Image (tube, rainbow, N blue to C red; front, side, top):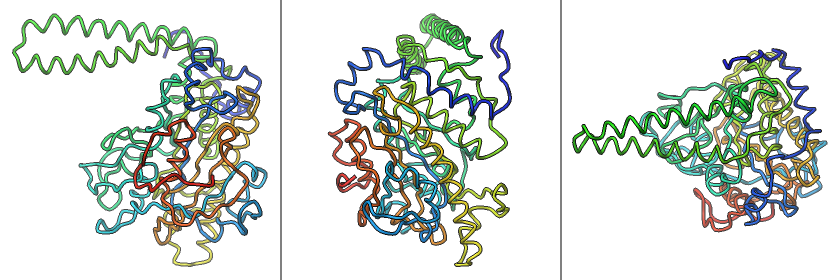
Length: 455
């Protein structure tokens, strides 16, 4: 703990309340001439010049179809039970029907739909069924981050409200890596999400109390520089005593050190992160709704301060068997999804689906209430996918996935509708989102067949 650090007020509710007051702060202080000049290339920018953001929010175990899908179509649609919390936001969301992930279907691989639902959600590729030889694909958030990540301090942000397992076998012989990660930087490298709100906040804004964070950041950068200098000096002195094979190993080591050195230098050139006038969160709240809202608030801060423009949030891994005692449901979520058409179990699953949508709706309301660089709302200048890699959890289907697309994409999307797209790959949507982020030279992604029209 840094010297002079004052322990934050442990009240999570005070912290949550404090985040709400940040609407009055100057929006995107880090957006200077440098960022706007870079944005002039058309990457991740709304027509107004404000940053354009993309986020992907995952909920587990599918949804009860009869309670999810609206009545009607186009702009004349009526929300049913599960999506009722979105009623005040109807003009800001699209309900997307007919999107599929056929790569998540069992085929010769047999069981393991939860691992496949999770692992294919943002990759659109068939997973290698193994506990040790993992192979997925680069996820769409990382495709976007590679192209626009240099515009912000952090290329992407990965969050989760679920501790999960990081190694070993989980679902029917699939690696736990598939089931507990949404984001992948390569076919074999997941991007582990941060599950601790305190660590996520400190990664974005530095450690310490308000007013101390910039000094702590400078001290940490100086320490990193000193460690790197020491490692390089030590390696140069050692080279004279090494044989040919060991010299090759040393060169590989030095390559990694120099890569880290370049990242430190890039961080040093970047403007210091803003210092939100709120206490650092104490950790994971006991109340699960507070936990989700806290992570959503951290994401809002990341977007509001232009710290990143790409993010993933996993509310829980697919197959999660969390109970929801706070709404009177003591049974596990996953167990209930195998309801075998029992009306009381179906009702409980739909209540859990409704609980998750309530948390998402609160997040959207806060985005809508937060002013952006151009005077519009953060919600207007965002594209937020809310969905699951399973459709009907009882049957483990992966067609007609439950998907909501929130935000107007800076004016590039047409919200306020329920659109039936008619058996299209989910990856077609991702191609269309990438194009709106300024990446118009991506010919395909995963199992895509083309860009999704009418979004």
